[in-house]
Amino acid sequence: MMASDFAALLPVLLRASAAFSVAAIAVIALRLPLRRSFGPGVAYAAWLALPLCALAAMLPAAPAGSPLALHAAPSARPLAGALSGLTPTSTPTELGGVVLLVWLAGALYTAARQTGQQRAYLRGLGQLDRHGDIAYADAAHAGPALVGLWRPMVVVPVDFERRYSLQERELILAHERAHASRRDPLANAAAAVLRCLNWFNPLAHIAERLMRVDQELACDAEVIRRHPDRRRSYANAMLKTQLSAGDAPLACQWQSTHPLKERIMNLNRTTPYALRLTGRLLIASAMAAGSWAAWAAQQTPAGPLYDVAVKLEVGGASSTPHLHTHAGETATLRSGDGAQQWETRLTLKPTDNGKVFISSSVKHGGKEVGKPGLLVALGEPGKVKIELDDKSRLEMQLTVTQLPQ
Image (cartoon, rainbow, N blue to C red; front, side, top):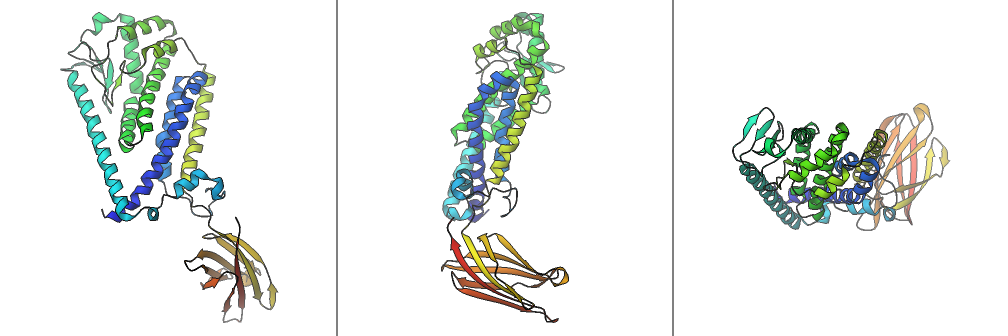
């Protein structure tokens, strides 16, 4: 890959990181109100906004003039302006390549470090004695945890039966199997990838830690909904569990860095189904709106606004319409109807010497008959004349002036 290719990729990554950061700030600020109002499951689901907004910001921008794009003036669109300003021309090729290589080195280092942590955790489990989806570790401090991405297994300590009562064991297994049914190991893997890609962003590290807390609280709430009369046994199981041997980026650990007091306090809270459903709908709507905003914000801010004074002569009839259009947008002018209709599409582009280049496409009766171009100075007229074999004729005089925005 050439340096120019690196420089072209850098703005895409910066846009994605900016959208990721905005979404992270929003979720961090709202997670506690969401949990209190709609339950831990809704607060956990809100974290999906981070990858969605980042991916949306990487999609191709909406074409100029598209109804899906943002059309407010640049001063009214600070986010759009900030994101759209990240174009390949805004970063020198050499500097862009250096910055991208530094980013890549940091991402690879973070990935290697997380891989090392995961391997160290797995080695700490020792030899596993597997029975179905349950595996007994050699060490008493290993587990309970859910380990594995595609076919996860529940890892429990060697003294699982002795340390916990039958009811406590059932609740622990229900908790870990809830992780499996919700595909939480895959969510942890996605969070680890985002952390690698955003290694320079402190919000990525904070967001991953808080997401894991909400993940555990959501599983606790799901198990308690199924076993509402076993809150005391559930709390006792938490208290009996020792801290895990180490942090595992991909595993779902019963107790590690998760705040034990917060988890026990949340066992006494239940959220009605109607509120949980309302919260899910609100979160889905907010994520859709946020993703659209991250994508639509790439729309290039509107260029200079021009007034185009036209003197039009068609078949002996004359008119003097005015067009208002931004640079880069297409304005359409029609005269006549049916088979004798003339349609002219004009696109204005400012040049370095203070003039304006007008590119046009002229159709007669729905068939393109010419694509004339004019380079005119502001305030000075330029002329277009098209004659056809059937003596049909179009004459235009265009005078361009720039308007304040």
